[in-house]
Length: 90
Image (cartoon, rainbow, N blue to C red):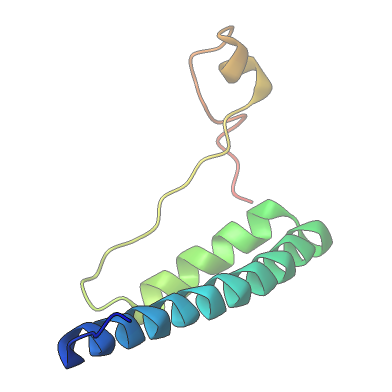
């Protein structure tokens, strides 16, 4: 029979609670990720990225902004210097 000290039992209980909370958070993220994927399929990545940038600008306290670009296939293949397909506003 192994006798454990109270601090060891408390540590093990705390560790089990942390693992349970991490599992719940991972499961919630999985559901949110699926929802995000459905939104991207429905609305397109550019619309979602614009909305994320707007939300970040609205809720961020430090005044930071999200900057993003979707490199063109020509840029990714090394045949074009500009990562943006055009200078158009989307």
